[in-house]
Image (cartoon, rainbow over all chains, first blue to last red; front, top):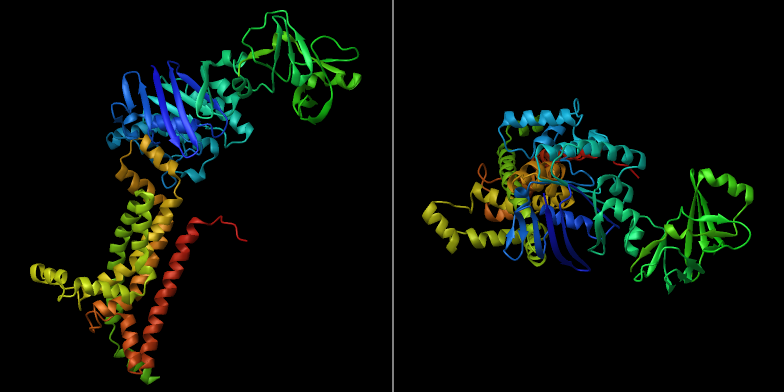
Length: 348
Length: 234
């Protein structure tokens, strides 16, 4: 199954310009709040007006501005899970599940029963959404979508309204419930853990555009652009000044890096993950940054050091609990060292 | 005391029945028209919406006698449209119960329309989107999702509409007149007996209408209370 999406949408102060094609069954779209992720999903589902573009699944065209095709959302068979689940508040769980079914009454009842069974909603059939917990509401919403047998399921930030403990459990639940589903699922989120856990193919969005597309794990492990590095959780990103194949300067961090592997010629910036620094006491060694502490935060399992760079920049160094002992013994380090093999080579 | 008993026994209850009948029928009309108008206005573009909203709210803001003036202008049998209705369909609005209903509907309609609109505007738009992606037809969405969800707002609008229709005076007196047993509503009865200086009889009718009003307020609070039992007070 292949999904093709080309969209152009202009609003007062925002422009959406999306172009992607994917054959993956589990697609994740990662982006900051307000980057146009939800609008993209709503456009695919057909509940959002689109200026121009083309949306198709395999050979079924849902929208084509050139041919003036614009299928109603009712005809697209695309399930949409809203952040607040959008359960109909005056209907019971069972009525919600049956709301979109068009078969005979007996058929619908039977199908609803199967969904209630499958999504562990037994005993809750006659409750209204207000009487359900967050997890039960999510299961009801998913049961309602699944009963409708959609070709595609769109998940719009389904976990962002939940506290982190519940969110973690529900993510696992969701993965299990979607296991047997054959169609395409697109998850939109600003949370990289959710996306990493869920998707095979990753799209990264910024300012209404898709800036990166690729295999999720590959994109996370070696993002190619500054924006991709930032969104996949890289805390330290700085422009570089090229010296030769094995040397470059990072002006903002006040250091020169010597690297064994050849630096790709088109590298404009580097990224370095906050956990990868090595503390150094005493003499300055190569690839070191002066440890000039600006502030520090202690969390249950992690310490966060914010180190002063040049031009009002900050370098983040995160230290896991198992390394605290050595820091407590030896005191603050004089330098922190970069391991060149961990550097991400980035373009703007 | 005997005087009061006598007054009570000889009382002609027709104004109460006429008022109640008028109120109920006008409320039914306003209910459907108001919801229909609210839906249309919300779908309209910005400018059309402003104009339509103004026109539809006008009867609430203007003195009822102005509405009465326009209604007479249209329905008087001496005017083209009124004459046409009377000659071809034998429909007469002026000085009839139909006039009572028409006047009460026109005056009470904006209350229904505005309450329904406010209730629809508060509705979570995702509910409608979700319903669409689930393949529900627009009509089904409207009657099965939107109206029940907006229920409390629509209910209180309906009650206010009924209250307003029940007590309508200005436009009714102009269009339907005060024909005892036919178009004589409670409000008109009170005005008439006061002119004769009959405070006792007027007082009885005032009491009746106040009882109904308290009943309406009680029902409204019940309706509103059922939805907001966890509202915090400050």
